[in-house]
Amino acid sequence: MSGIDLIAAERTRQVEEEEWTPEHDDEHTAHELALAAAAYAAPEQLFRKVEYYDEKISFLDCFPTQWDSRWDKRHRDGQRSLAHADDTPREIRIRHLAKAGALIAAEIDRLLRINSGS
Image (cartoon, rainbow, N blue to C red; front, side, top):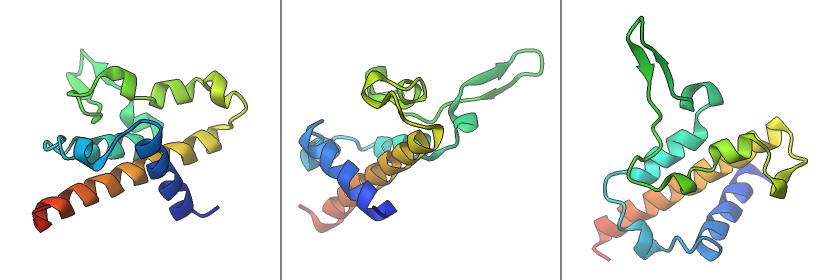
């Protein structure tokens, strides 16, 4: 399967299993879909929240704060949930990138609907 095939399959899964329809996506007007995509696309080191109080440096997670934390499945995937108990780190990374691509596609479609007035 190619990358585009994985992204298309993930988008289909999001719509059919999670019921993230175009109408649902249209409610996310604060760029949440793109933020979630960025969070899934980022290497693990970038999406972990790290704070150094002595040096006053912090790296904040870009996952949409408006969303319920149960929709952020990055941590669960990293712990190899029972559904994917045999996944390698590479397979987990590919799954995250497919989710990111599907979220980007959803955001593009949302913006196209706005531009077309439908």
